[in-house]
Structures are given as structure tokens and as C-alpha cells.
Image 1: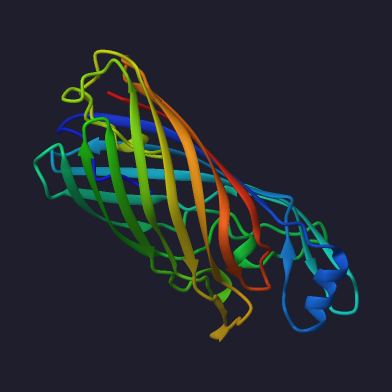
Image 2 (image 1 turned 90 degrees about the vertical axis):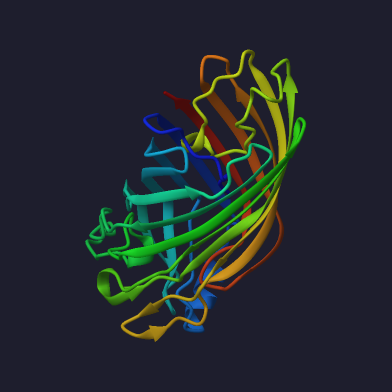
Length: 302
């Protein structure tokens, strides 16, 4: 999720984000059985996305940002019809760069609304190979090879130390490497946060949930403050296609709740941590269900 906050003109912000996803572990026999049914099912021990970003305030209403991820899929393995499971090794590397522009429509501090638009560029590698020298499928690569438009919106309302936020982001998948079109993706949800500390509510104007380090308002609070928050969010991923043929067993959706804590320092930096636990999921057979997702972030406004 992201907030409708923007930087003041001429100000910068930088941030680091870490997302660690632990999937359910499927036995080799399950992967092979799915392969015998024509489903290219796979599993990993964990998936890691660590990204670095920077943002610049063009004006009080417009902020532009760039974010580059590092991707790792640990111990990737895939079922093979009649032949058990193929060990594909661990895949890691720089992923696709995202460029975003956020335009804030409102002036007030108590109710805010913003639109986001951008583009994911094909900067990540699409030529990683298995231990046997075979080029991995595009969905397992650090990059996708596609140019994907991104659209979204965010809103928030504040009442004293409590804030309610909502956002949604849509990424339209286009044709990428190896004639593969990965599934388009929608992520959205709501967050409720409460601030604790000595900061005055009229001076602390960046009451956010986790992952907002590139949106920090440069006006610093007179005192450090803590925030507790809880998010109710979900993600939908469409089916992928290879060579124009849709893989019916790909894609899916899941919803989760994510409680967390955030610390805003008077010196201008902030840190947050949250853990997402599934409430409901319907992920198709090619991918495993999710056990949990850990999210950490660190940011600094200039």
C-alpha cells in the first residue's frame, strides 16, 4: 500500500524495502502428480524482494520516484511428468526498474487524495539458467522483459492521532521475454494507524503505514513518535500466457491482515515492520499458497 502524501518542491527522499515471503511447502510427490496432470507446478523455500528507491518533489503536488528491486527465489524446484522433481537451483539478480509519478489533488492535511501513474521497465535479467544449463521460464527470472504500465490511487483521512488510509494499484502485464505475458496484477487495501508520542498532531503530517518511505513529508516532527497500524489488503494476479497459450493453472488471489509498527525520528528518518498473515487465498495449482509475508522498510527525507 502507499499513501497520498507528496514531497514539497525541491526535496528528496530515499528508502529501502525488504519483503520476505514464505510459501507453503509442497512435497515432491505432489509436484509430480500435478505435472502428470499437465500443470507446471513449482515451489521455493522462500521469495525475497529487496528494493532501493529515491523520490523527488517537483512541486508540492507532484512527486516522481524510481525503485529498483533485487529478487531471489531460493531452492526453486518443479515437477516433471513421470520423472519426479527437477531441481532448478536458486535464482537471484536485479529486477525491473519502476518509474512512478504521484499527483496529489488536495491541499488540506486532514483529507488527502492522489493519483499514481508509471511504467515498469525491462531492466532485469531474463537469461538465468538451471544447473543443467537450460534457460529458466520467464516467471522464474529476476526480470520479465516487458514494459508494464502502472496506475493507482490513494486516499487518507485523519482525526487527531488516528488515520485511515486506502489505496489500489494496477499493473498491466504486456508481452515480455520468451513470448511470455505474465499475469496482470491488482493490489489494494485499507490501513488504520494510531500515533503515540509527544509530537503535536498539527506538526506531524506524515502519519503512514509501512512502505511509505519515498512519500515522507520533509517537515520534521519536534519529537520522535511511534505508530501502530493494521492493514487489511489483498492481491489478484491474472493468468499468464506463453506463445499466446493461456496457462489455466496460473494466477490467483489472496487476502491478508498485516499488523505492524513504525518509528518516526525527529532527525528525519523512519523505520517500519509488519507481518502479513493470510485470511483467505485461492491460488491456482502452478503456485503454492502463502504461509506469511514479512515486510521491513527504512527511509530518510532530505
